[in-house]
Length: 478
Ligand SMILES: Cc1cc2nc3c(=O)[nH]c(=O)nc-3n(C[C@H](O)[C@H](O)[C@H](O)COP(=O)(O)OP(=O)(O)OC[C@H]3O[C@@H](n4cnc5c(N)ncnc54)[C@H](O)[C@@H]3O)c2cc1C
Image: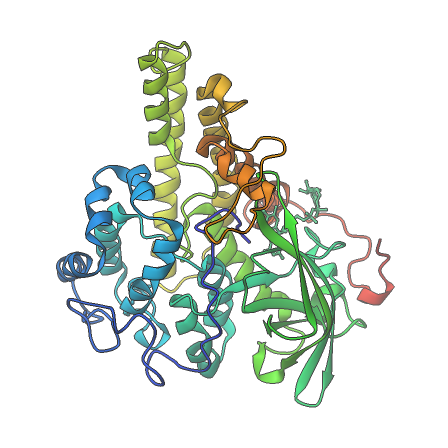
């Protein structure tokens, strides 16, 4: 549930049932070079030391990351963005996908390398300058969290490797028009028919629903018990006749999320995750994975949703002063504000390290992911607001080729959607500022996460609920 991160695509057809261990050689293996096996996976043993990981990943980068991107890395993210288009990156991604480096801590049979936390960190440090964003973050964070916690061995082997390789893109179908913060009150029904479940209802805010091959779904299987007890968690094939996806456009002009209408969509019982009626517990693994992703501590490979970090503010502020405009680096209050945001960013990073260490030790994430979610949402909004401020008048009016009556044509000669042309014209900082507004809503609002912290960390009394314990069907709904 994180539109605006490294966009998910990879709209190749579903990979069927091949796993990391068997079946056809995965896409990307043939193009992989350097210290890799015939399947393209890095030849790094699970017990490799951080030094061994560093050395082999450096070799892998030399052999596999295109020379122009490596050269651009010295100039930072902006230079990399210039050297490589989104399409270039997607074309190259299968090589990364098969390497095991996308989720280096995951076991090899699930698409990773099984590395220790320290070795995986060393590998990531080598990769970091090249800005190799992980595609499919909702698969890597949201779906995978539930698969690891509640999936059968068969389900994990079937679904995790194509998530890592971005061969099957995932979305999350939880929220409904009448159930967002109060997710457990959702109405989508799942009725058992033989070996299948038949799902009917409406979901909303489904990020990347229009690209997805699969979705994780919470549906009501028993309306006669209290709301949290009657839910079941399913893995839904999005490419079937009973699934209609309608795109929604957001404030930056882009289409990221959708409404999804389920009209007797079919899910085989083998794609039920966890027990019937245990969906709330299974769903919480996904929500926790999502909170970690939004706070920057999870496996989704996302460190910020919208815009760039505090070091970008330093550059912007210096540019303002160099251009002789007021309100830049020359002003102590601006430097002070940037230093404050930078310090908070570092603290955020260290707290995220603690969460990762907890997870690496096999412990549940704990309340840090709610703290991180609340802090990161607010921090990113303040960071992006300052970035847009530093643009001065350019933040409100910018050069654009979008003029009334002008038609823009794509590479294939077909007219482009004016909203997409507008979206492309937005300065990076304005886009970041607008996108960051959602950071305190997506993945659970800040208010709701503060409730979680109040109840579970501070031990404050629970929110009053006059309908607690009543069967779902007897609770009034709008
Ligand atoms: C960018 C974005 C992407 C998303 N992607 C997905 C996705 O992929 N899949 C998915 O399932 N959902 C997705 N969502 C939905 C998201 O999870 C919900 O928007 C969120 O949980 C809030 O629900 P709501 O919008 O229905 O707001 P409501 O629940 O109606 O809340 C409205 C307001 O009331 C406040 N409020 C509600 N209850 C309480 C309470 N008990 N105490 C204090 N304040 C309260 C809220 O904080 C909020 O300010 C996405 C949302 C956004 C913005």
